[in-house]
Amino acid sequence: MPQLQAKKSLGQHFLVDENILRRIAEATDIRQGESVIEIGPGTGLLTKHLLQQPLSKLTAFEFDERAIDILQHEFTDERFSVIHKDFLKVELSDLRALGKLNVIGNIPYYITTPIVFKLLEERANIRCATLLMQLEVAERLIGVPRTKEYGIPSVISQCFSEVKLLFKVKAGAFRPAPKVDSAVVRFDFENDYFQRSNTTAPERFDEKQFSILVRTLFAMRRKTIRNNLKQLQSTNTDSPALADFLPRRAEELTVKEFLELYHLLY
View (cartoon, helix red, strand yellow):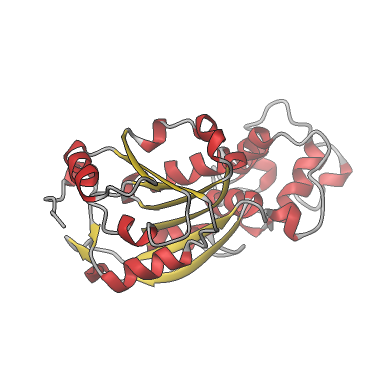
């Protein structure tokens, strides 16, 4: 298979370890007849393994125009198509005709967070996602309260999906090798916090408002919830029901407690 010279400007590190590529493809849990989206296939090192799965359609979004001709030449499978477009500019709702999507990708480190939040925001169109990312980011996504890893990505991803770190990948599995290790992370959007806890969202629950609350409370980690809430000028903190929350810090709250606080405030 033809190779490309990695571009630093695109944050490219090509995963070349066949065992890891095969393991990722098997970890994606592709169901019979499912439509799959691959983010940044490069020259198709993972693509070839995905096409061995029982999918009905594999649509790849590739930003590097050098890779387009290679992909079109290498893969003549009628189930495969490649689109020259930045995935961050793709409206997943436009792909609604394909049904619930299974998203997979070895994503550049510098756009990992924007991609994760895009998937969370557009999760109504996605069944699950399996992403290869920087280990440090993966550890933040699965972070638990009272640890330095726990923060905005932890709370939002764990609220709106079930997120798991499946396995780690050493830097030596890539060409060129990055300076840090990576990890494969899986998001199950059909098993969010409400499903897992067998509860319903607070009345009149506004996801964007909830996300703003989480971001505000983590804005200054060492400050108390009382002090951080001052940034939300329309918020009334005089309610006695808030007394147990106000002296605490955001890093101490579980996802359940963030939802309880949201309900009390709004």
